[in-house]
Amino acid sequence: AEPVDFGVFSHSAIAQQRIFRDFIDLNTSKGLKICLWGASHEANTLLALSGADGIEYVIDSARFKHGRFTPVSHV
Image 1 (cartoon, rainbow, N blue to C red):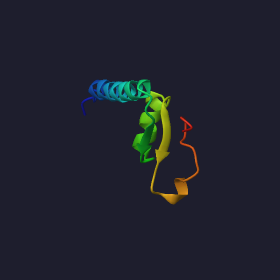
Image 2: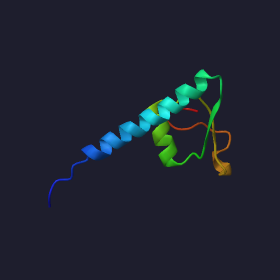
Image 3: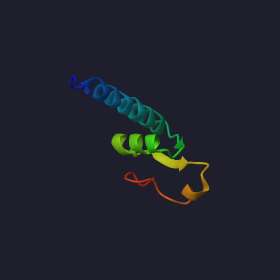
Image 4: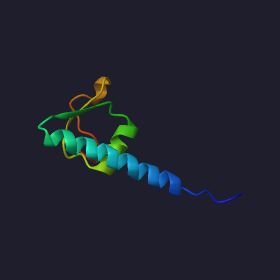
């Protein structure tokens, strides 16, 4: 089997982190509070990789997640 080039994935992931971070920075600079809906593993990964500075809350409908902090970013 041929080796797989994950470079495209890496560039896409970095671009998504930058877009997320820019959104947070732009809106918090306006004095707005940022809340994230959904504490899925995808959302938590994005938080951990992008930095959670500026995220006030993470909201999730799953009751077992209520009153807890997210892993790594501790939001």
